[in-house]
Length: 152
Image 1 (cartoon, rainbow, N blue to C red):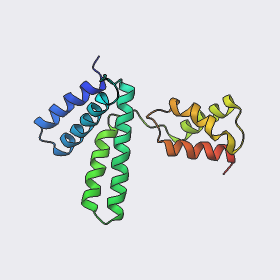
Image 2 (image 1 turned 45 degrees about the horizontal axis):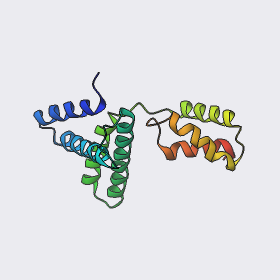
Image 3 (image 1 turned 90 degrees about the vertical axis):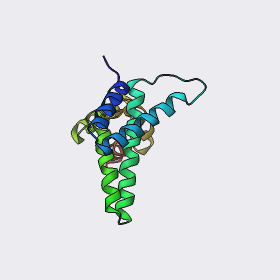
Image 4 (image 1 turned 180 degrees about the vertical axis):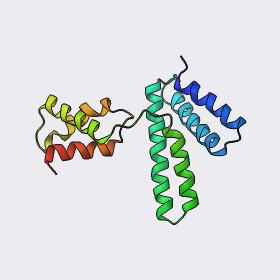
């Protein structure tokens, strides 16, 4: 079974043959980020698919933030390019949780930890974060946890 990195490489080759500049540029940047992560630290190592998903999530978030910054600065063309790159990256990420699924996971974690009030946010986040890995943005998870614990 091919790994996510193998899939990215194969898709890069396909994009290059199709002369899809946006997809080619995006996949090259993603593979560079993966390679950089592989050689960082005391010894080089191959990344697992979960670690690659984490990198792709981080890169997609960067594109989303850059698109917002460009849009705010009145650079619609650059914002559109960043949004196109984000769309390519999100194609490799697991499906995002909808609001009801996320709320159910958070409610289960609250029941499991017995957390009450704002002081319980940390323990609940610690429990929920690995369960939603790559399927929900951290700020979105934090907002749901906060609203369920504080009633806000």
